Image (cartoon, rainbow, N blue to C red):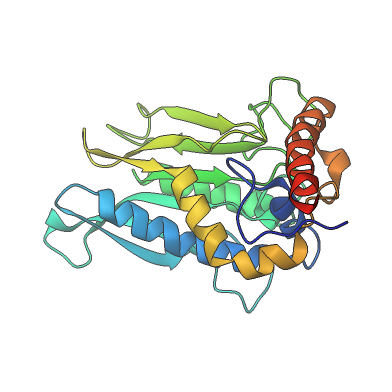
Length: 249
């Protein structure tokens, strides 16, 4: 028996699809490109007056020379120049730029440079198979019992790089992704529903997802989830499989 669906049957990140994408040749780059577009549009719709968004070359180093990896930059257009002064950058982290990736050290330097320049930084991390970008955070990949697999790290450079703070949002394997507060200039901010944007991206890739996801089987590299999360995923899958059997009877 196989169970296919063009819908995401998880409340949040689809563990089957996300694990598939993290495999060699799994297509993370395609997901990255689609998700950045959806993030930019969602942020743009929620910004207060005086700000605009652009998709630009990422702070990250691409694992593929031909890939133009992008991020979302929020600009303050009241600075008197076009497109304005960069205020906040939103990164969707890629495997090569995380710990154990070949470009981790270079990305860290770019990260520090951005914050020193007074630019806020939002890093969305759905790569549970690698440790978090900040070594001070608990590592899900290393089996830390308190760690969460999916993170959003919001580092503020306001009112100055020295006085800024970092807020870490997280979600479990069967949780909805959180809404996060994106810092802008001074006290300005906007709220972004990460789960809504993820579901939009999943829907845009639903044909691929339906081909590679079989809910009758465990996700790829299932052992890279903690045992307690394996149990949570299997409980969700048991419900999906039961419902499928009932439909077939």
